[in-house]
Length: 223
Image (cartoon, rainbow, N blue to C red; front, side, top):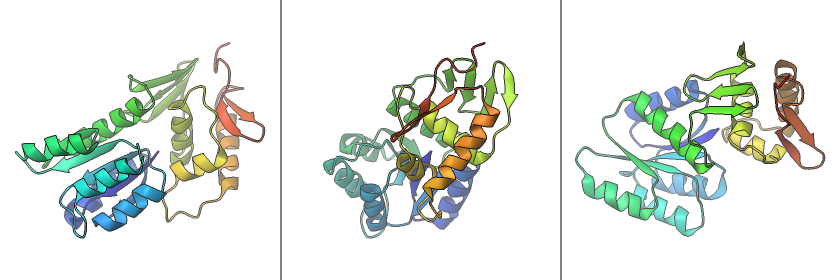
């Protein structure tokens, strides 16, 4: 999953970036409104964490322009304590949720996970495909009740597919959503990670749709 973090205060931005990366997300960062606007218009993100008090272009203006341009990625806005008017205005501008500063990092992670799930019509933090289970809270994966050890990249790829059940996902889409902008993107890398995942998961879990991409296969893990 790929996130955009928009925050101009280094003392808050860097710990947030590190925490989100440690949680398994690919994170792009912007420290001003103009860069955030450009990234949100031209790059693919699964969710955005957006501070409102930004230099060059304020967060509400950025959000409004994204929505006017048809960008639908879920947005979590960060607001100052007791700034209830910012919360109302932000929701009206197209925000999906808000978090008041200061906040606990775990709450931010929980809200981001919920936004990503809801965007795909999923309610539970446990994603299941047959006997394959992925816990978005703990980052643990099991097949038939047995733990499956995955690298960060393998987990990210599997999580993206499991957030989109019954959907064919192209290699280019996976590349856009699994790696930050400054990563040396190569669609061949996706094939490598798919191959590694297949060796760790029950046969048939990841199906290749010729000429289109990948999707979760039949009843994975069912004997």
